[in-house]
Each structure stands twice: as structure tokens, then as C-alpha cells.
Length: 366
Ligand SMILES: Cc1cc2nc3c(=O)[nH]c(=O)nc-3n(C[C@H](O)[C@H](O)[C@H](O)COP(=O)(O)OP(=O)(O)OC[C@H]3O[C@@H](n4cnc5c(N)ncnc54)[C@H](O)[C@@H]3O)c2cc1C
Image: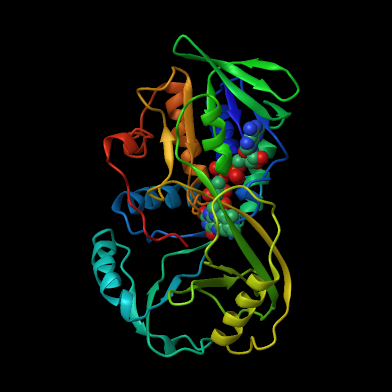
């Protein structure tokens, strides 16, 4: 078996295949472990999605993340912070209906006056979801890598083409000219759509650049992940007490460099200073960017399509909320490719949904 991409999803799949005793696995990574979004994210987890299927996936996925924690070599520091939405007139009704849906899953939150959160310079109505939280993505990646590195071949090379013949996947051709034979699982994040397009398969996954920043520390003033729906800014704290977050600007689709812009940095800093007591004049320590791997309905794509060549699978397109799901998706995908055991989520999140019209419309991309 060939896994394309050594991000959270590729490594988790490898980890679960190893647990099953599968021996012939090659992982191909064009740059380095965690080069994609898995090394560039904000490390937050949440149950609170707009679409019920994503809520159900999150309930199982986060439960799995919390369970696997004890098996990982390094502590991923999972901790509960809650998510706090700063509401405005346009979204109060939406949150009322979301709250009743979330309550039906046992994850209801609370409408509160924002002044209950002493660190905020904002009055008005807030919605607090106490169940959500944070973890540390690097320690998940490092743990998964450590578990598989001596069992599986990791090739640092680029897959140029997935080769298909007579309705079956034959293997992959690498930039170095090498050909590797085997079934193929695409876990190439934002690059997955482009890679499959080269093989004549249309999977709608597009990169959307996002920037993210870390400030000087404010030593534990801010705990929840704050999402200000009117400005699009979101932030929480790190375990050091720094503020980490970003801002939802009009980012163009497509590949670009992993730079950050001074104007977004200044906007982020201004919003944080305007919202958080004591953050006036705060310094930005660092910033970076990565891609959200966007699908048309903003939900991920996993499994295979009946119309695809035999031996081709995908687990990708998490549209900006995929790190938290990587342990769970790797388990589901390993059950599928190694044991032909199909979780109900394989049908729900199948790539075929874009032809059948059974899309999973997700409006809460943070
Ligand atoms: C700024 C930002 C904040 C985020 N915040 C959160 C968050 O708080 N919580 C959360 O759960 N998620 C978050 N995400 C999303 C999350 O990071 C991604 O959904 C997740 O990491 C995707 O993992 P992946 O393994 O699918 O892809 P990636 O981590 O992108 O891995 C894909 C890998 O494939 C490799 N590759 C690509 N093409 C080829 C090729 N042709 N040949 C060989 N290798 C190839 C790449 O080099 C890369 O290493 C955030 C993302 C960003 C950018």
C-alpha cells in the first residue's frame, strides 16, 4: 500500500495499519513530516458544527482523540477551554436553532452576557460552548511518526502521477523517476485535488491560504477560543498564555507561498487589542500561514467512489478543521483498506456525494 502525504491523516493511517500487522506500506512525502497544514494549525477541537453529520463525526472523532491520547508516546496536552462566539443581530436566530440541535446531541451551550468573561472588552450577547478545547498537534504528529518510522518505508520524494490501467491503480510515479507498485491512499491535504486531477479523477479540493499569529504572553487571561462573528477574528491561548489566532479575510483560492502579510498581522493585533483587556500594544511574536483544504460543501472526503479505479482511496479535504480528526480518520481508513470494514462515515463522506447531490453543507468554518 502507498500512502501519499505524511501529515496527520497519512501518519495516522500508517499507525493504524501497523497496529493491524500490515507490513508492506510505503509513505511518500514531497517535503517533510508536517509540511502541510498538520504542522501549521491552531490545534483546537470542537463538537460544534452546523451540519449534523459533522457533529456526529466530531462526537466520535474527539472521543477517539481523547482515548488514543494514552497510547501515544508523547502527551498531546488535550485540555478543555470552551468556544465563545460573540454574537451580533444577524446570527442570534441561527445560534438558537443550532443550540437546540446541539442539545439533542448532549452538547448544548449557554447564551450569556459577554461581560461574564472578565477578560473581554465587549458587552452584548455571547454563546459559550464549554465542551470544546485544544491539544498539541506537534506531539500527535511526532508520536505517530515515532511509532511507524522503523516499520515502514518513508520516501521523501514527490508523487507526480498515480498510474491507472484497465480500471485498476498500478502504483505511483515519483519525481525521481522511481515507480512504486501498490494500492494508493491519497492523504495529500490541499494538494489532493491537483494530484488526482493528473490521474483524470475529479475531486473538488482546493487550497485556501490562511494566516495565523502568536502574541506575547498575557499569562492565562484568555481561556476559551473566542470567535467574533462581526470581524471574523478568532483567538485563544497557548499553554504558555500567549494569544494564538487569525482572522477570516477574503483569502484567494489557489497555491501561493507560505508568507504572511503585514496588513493581516496589524489587523489581527488591532482586533485582539480592541477585544482583550490588557492586550493594548501587545507584540506579535510570530506568524505563519498554511492552507485550508476546501471542498465545495466544507466537509471532508473519505473512502472511494464506485466509479474510481480499483485500489484508489482518499482521506482529505477537511476544510480547515482536520487535525482534530486525524487519529479517528486513520482508524476508519485502516479498517477499510486492510479489513474491508466500512464505517457508516465512509458512505456519508464519500467523494460520490458531489454527483449524487447528497452534500454535507457545513457553514461553520473557523
Ligand atoms: C492556519 C490553520 C489553522 C488550523 N486550525 C485547525 C484547528 O484548530 N483544528 C483542526 O482540527 N484543524 C485545523 N486546521 C486544519 C488542519 O491543519 C488540516 O485539516 C489537517 O492538518 C490536514 O491534514 P492532512 O494530513 O490531510 O494534510 P497535510 O497536513 O496538509 O498533509 C499533506 C501532506 O502531503 C504532502 N504532499 C502533497 N502533495 C504530495 C505529492 N504529490 N507527493 C508526496 N507528498 C505530497 C504535503 O507535503 C503534506 O506534508 C488548520 C489549518 C490551518 C492552515
